[in-house]
Length: 271
Image (cartoon, rainbow, N blue to C red; front, top):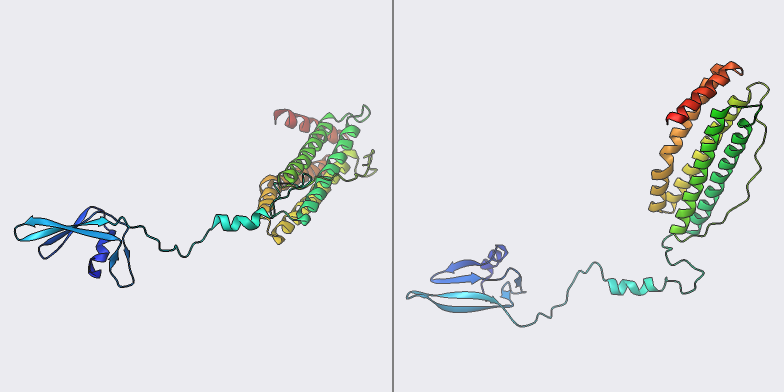
């Protein structure tokens, strides 16, 4: 046993030597503990002559097992797994990967899939209109075709996410889009672009509402997915369409539309 005043020396790198009178104590371990009496326990002091005037004591680790219980354990995996195992489904119809994913989130994702497919459907109808031989605005047609593909990809991203979280994809009905876009006052190009701008703003509201819902149920992963994959791109799309609407309002319904279509074709080719 060593007096308590030497206990602080046990935190220094080993081996080290402390002296008390004519006796040196060589410390060979750094994992000693104080007992309730303020003394070192679990060690053995072996003394041997150093000089004619004194002895040397070597502190060795005890071979006796330490049966003192561990206290203040934060994580006990085998105990906590007992309740988690109760939540592992045993029927094949239920997802094994689903974890902290609410029915509200699952339903909202399916609704957003329907929104993305509907927007894609409208853009595809616009593409078909502007690709007609008596309209022949190839640049605008290609723009809406690319926009339709992009919105369909967004729907598929939500479908992949639904499956990843253990939900079930349920596709819903879609409304038939209009086939004619020739407005008596605005013309077809401006009317279609204003409609597209309104669709992008509406879709942005749907995404923001989905993000709010994810925060309400504390689904951090879903909120991060929406922020990372959609919100920035949605704002950029709204900005781009706003510029197209402003340019078409200046161009009018005649030669200016043809020039805008040519400009848009060059932008899509170089992009």
